[in-house]
Length: 166
Image 1 (tube, one colour):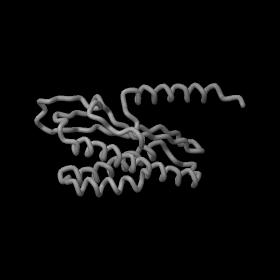
Image 2 (tube, rainbow, N blue to C red; image 1 turned 180 degrees about the vertical axis):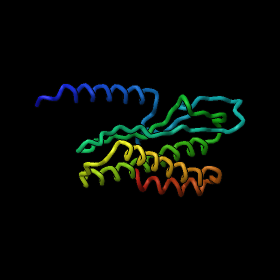
Image 3 (cartoon, rainbow, N blue to C red; image 1 turned 90 degrees about the vertical axis):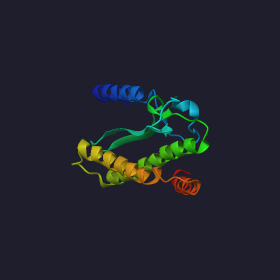
């Protein structure tokens, strides 16, 4: 089937942009767990013991049919650890990565619902707002946990996440 040269060129350009965006990131995978080597080690850091930079990489076109692709990412070059002796710190970082993946999946489900509606007036800004809303909701939930972690809370959050990503 012949492809429109313009569309192929645009797709190639966006594929290249996406590749460049993801080249220094770890894309969430059920089988790939974070390791200490995924962090920049700064032993003198006093403000925190660990910081895990996670985010969403999204790509979409709102022209019917809606085309949408998203990934949950971890940025090793922006993630810092100052103490690698506490395994629970690494567990917390993994839970943050996993929790964002649950929000990405919920967001994708909402996009699937929009596809079914076959909206003709959907704008790029609508999907931008959707992505921002899900990320803000993730941050809000994460912030509700981050200063009160105990092993039992880690176990509870892990159970919730597992029920979604398994």
